[in-house]
Image (tube, rainbow, N blue to C red):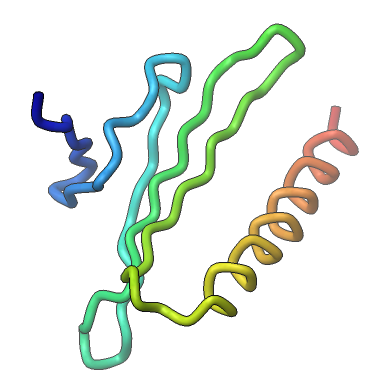
Length: 90
């Protein structure tokens, strides 16, 4: 069976998404010359204890390892800051 792909705003992602995360946002990362280097798909849903988030970024398979690890750290910082800010406003 062929893998289903998700399309957000005309951009195709090599991921089918997940039903338990019904809200999806996506985008592409591009260099100054317009070359695409990444596709981003973030999914959001309600969980038993509140918000659930699934963060996805697709880099070329031959990207160096530090790109993957660096983006994991970026996600950790970015989303921790957002959640702390939201909690402070509650």
